[in-house]
Length: 157
Image (cartoon, rainbow, N blue to C red; front, side):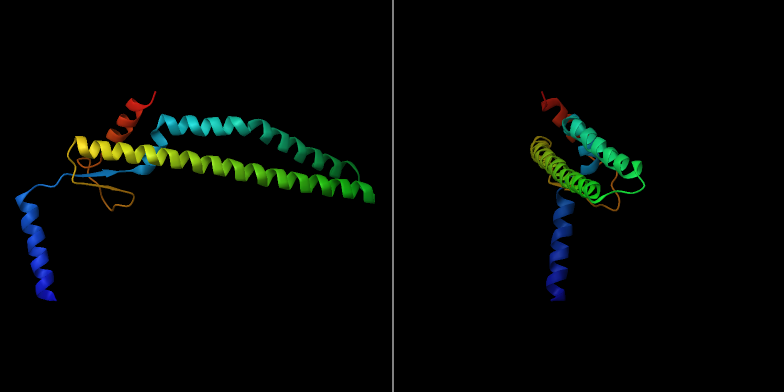
């Protein structure tokens, strides 16, 4: 087994030295956060839900106002407060789930765009290997994150 491993290692080292390998690295978090498409998408999601957010805050303030306006509450008032609280909770959960899903959809769409740009750049610039995600160290010579951002930005209308 050791002989086979040694043979494989020797083969890889000799083939690497015979031909240079072009390697690139992409900081995907940096790419995503610097894309205009992502920033615009996040702003669109936020603006879409801004009115509902304000309505929920108003409902919460109304509940607190009712609760604090009287020292003693009768059964009907308690029931009304509980119904309002339940409504507030359901609406908040629904809208939070909806916002989260829209953000996941946005990130999924951005991921597809980034992957396509990576493939195009790899072919155009003859890369043999492109890494992304975790790396202990990446030199500026192999970090192609800005190239990917530029490529996507230039293709975006």
